[in-house]
Length: 155
Ligand SMILES: CC(C)(COP(=O)(O)OP(=O)(O)OC[C@H]1O[C@@H](n2cnc3c(N)ncnc32)[C@H](O)[C@@H]1OP(=O)(O)O)[C@@H](O)C(=O)NCCC(=O)NCCS
Image (cartoon, rainbow, N blue to C red; front, top):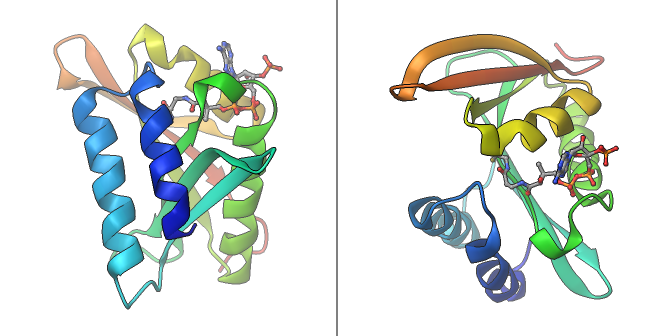
């Protein structure tokens, strides 16, 4: 990802229905921090392009203390480009990076809210399984679902 991608991401984030305003701000803050940080080891942001424009972005980073475990912190497609394979391309890019560093496990935290069903479908379609559920974690009636995927060849 490059600095020039940020304004295009900022333009489509408000239309992402699973994200509230705070999520969108948090994503932009994370991108800014990463672009400004001199030390990018263990954290990566990727953009995906369609027709010369940013169609989605993803971020993964290493979980401190755990060995070979990474978290997919963000994966987001421009709502105007959904179901066209952008998410799968982003995930493939993340996994290529993870194989390079011999990562073992990729996890994603999501919510049980109905709006996230498409995210769960996307994850299952791309080889994740639900590994854990923490009841009422985000709020009453809103559980944390943790999806996981083993990375082939990991340490
Ligand atoms: C999850 C997400 C990244 C998928 O991106 P995408 O570019 O649509 O993904 P792909 O085109 O590679 O995959 C499409 C698959 O995802 C699922 N999916 C995506 N959008 C869907 C929708 N509106 N309804 C149902 N399933 C959907 C389906 O499994 C679909 O496969 P199918 O079309 O064969 O049924 C995208 O929906 C998104 O950005 N969601 C909002 C952000 C978010 O909540 N991210 C996750 C938490 S950080």
